[in-house]
Every structure is written in C-alpha cells, then in structure tokens.
Amino acid sequence: MNIATRPVSYSCGDERFEAVAACDESTSGRRPVVLVCHAWGGRDAFVEEKASKLAELGHLGVAADVYGLDERGVRRTGSTPEECGALMTPLVENRGELRARLLAAVEAARALPEADPERIVAIGYCFGGLCALDLARANAPGLVGAVSFHGLFMPPALGAQAPIAAKVLACHGWDDPMATPDSVLGFAKEMTEAKADWQLHAYGNTKHAFTNPDANDHEMGIVYNADADRRSWEALLDFLKECVS
Image (cartoon, rainbow, N blue to C red; front, side, top):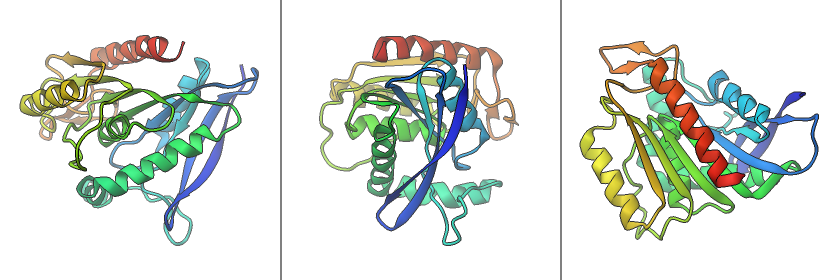
C-alpha cells in the first residue's frame, strides 16, 4: 500500500479553493470517492487524516476546502471560536453560496483520474456535517450517500426540496447542545418528506464533537467520546459498503 496525497485546486466564482486528495497508488483504476467536509475551523489535519484513512480502505479520499484561499493564496482557517465563527457564519446564513462551493468541490473530485464519478459519498464533521447534508439536499451529481457526524440539521430554505436520491446517515450525540432533540425531529421530518433513505444513530450521554480527541470543553458541550467515535466510524464503514460496494 502506498498512500499519497496531493493538492487539488478548483474555483467557484471569483474564489479559489484547495482540497487534498489521498489515494493508494499501489492500485490502479477508478474507485469510489469520499469527500470529507471540515468543521468550522477550515480544512485541517483532522479531515486530511480521515481522507488518508479512507484511501487505505480503497477509496479516493478528498478533504474539501469550503473557505478558500485569501488574496495571498493562503488557506483561510480559524484557530479561535471568534475566528472560526467569522468564517462559518456567513455561509450558514447564505446557504446558496455554501451550496455552490460544495458543488464545485464535488465536481473537482469527480474530475480526478482515480475517481468513479458516479460513486460519491460526502461525509462531514460539525459544520461539515451540515455540508454533507446540503449536498444530499442539492442532489449533487454522482452522490450516492451523505453522512453527518455531530452535524447541524437546519434546512437551507432554498425553495421546495426535491426528493433526495442519496442515502443519508446522521451520527448524533443526543446531548449535543448545538443540535437539540427538536432539531433532530425536524431533520427526521424533513428527510421523510423528501422521501430520503435515511438513518439516525443517536448516542446517549454524548455531546458535540464526539469524534475529535482534542474536544474537551464541558461548559460548551464539546467533548470527545471514544465509544461514540468508534461506533460512528463502524456505522460509516457499513454505510459505505451499502452505498459503493
């Protein structure tokens, strides 16, 4: 096995973006794509490591970039809650722009020579979970599955929702203060009305960011949970087998 990574440059409107693709170069041919959407801090080592781990399993892992590059060509990221919020909030408030950027990332991934363009799964963490769900809502080209890990559930309010063709999985910490039981019920209603093939895995005594070993802010409800992390990863693997095997 020879996992190699490389940058993938693409654009959306006047903005430039840079994803990272991970692929096992010891094998040839096209393979399913797993697009990994980042949390509110931007594309980081966490999602890049997930992309590489998925490449080890035979997929083409692509760590997407939703915030893009600044005028100097430097990737936009946040390191404090204030910086992260300043990057995320404008896109949460303008879901049309967010959708356009996400679809641009999908098209860039589909164009890679190792990609099977009709077997795309989007996964995401926190804000990235919302991104993965928004790609399902958009019926992105080639998308067969979408997975949200401790994601946000609010719908985009971009007009009538067409039936959702991709399978959907939400892995959710029941005590997540950023996605309360009311929002979970709203998500269930939305997915059902969109005729989606959807699943919800809810983990008890589990808060936000449960997959991130660095999450340790009990006051904000952002806490790592090793059991939920393991269980949700296993759920993802089963989901991928169903979607792209």
